[in-house]
Amino acid sequence: MAYEQVETMRPLLDAKRRLTTLEAQGGLPVCRPKSLILCLDGGLFAWASKRWRAQRVSGFFGRTVLPRSHKGRTALVGNFGVGAPAIAVLAEDWAAHSVEQIILIGVAATLSPSIKSAEIITVHSALGHDAVSPAYAPATAIHAANPTLLKQLTQQPALQKQARALTISTPYRTNQQTIANALAHNATLLEMETAALFAVGANIGIKTAAVVVAADAFTHHQWQPIPNWHSIQQSLRIAYQNILTRIQHN
Image (cartoon, rainbow, N blue to C red; front, side, top):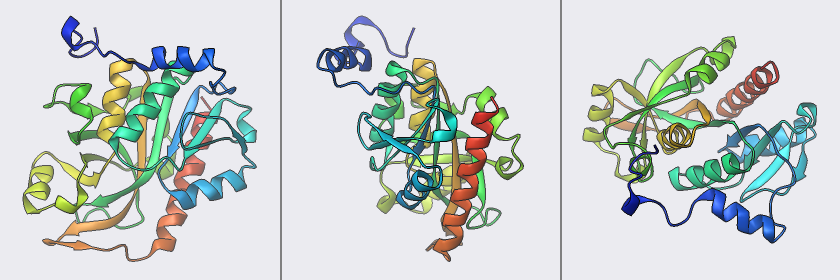
């Protein structure tokens, strides 16, 4: 039984019911991919769409394209905004439609000097201090990537480094206590989506994973801006190519 699904807590609206309405109106996406990549970086999305000669198709919100080499089995979605609410709605809609696994790719702030800017990190778990994950799992939960999908991704040498993230909704309210609490729970990354994706995936029964590139930093008791945005973009491209390769092999 889904989390908190006692009678008075049952949602009055869910993705399957909404999709039934969309289908009656002819508004469902024509494509039925099994894998979905959620791209949080606009530059990466534009590059990947062009590099893989992706075909634009109808989606739910944001922009959806199909890399031609994957013959409709994988969809890439971008330009949908940021934050846990957008991720949760997209994940539920696509899962109700056809998708069996979702991989997020984006950037994160590092909380530890051991993680350098432009490093590619596969997130194995996340603490949920966001507004969404408590609706899908107990607020005290540590949300984990799907172990099978995590193992598949980390077979790629470029995706082998792993870490835990702290997912928040208010980056401009990050303070020393935020960082201390994260580090006390072995979280060395700070971002805004991963815990929500993992919580939704576990709740509705789809595989989820996340790969991020370390960008800015909260270290030495202060915020450090991104030192070189070009290197971040290069790492995002490498991460994306490795994700596509691994999806194609499974």
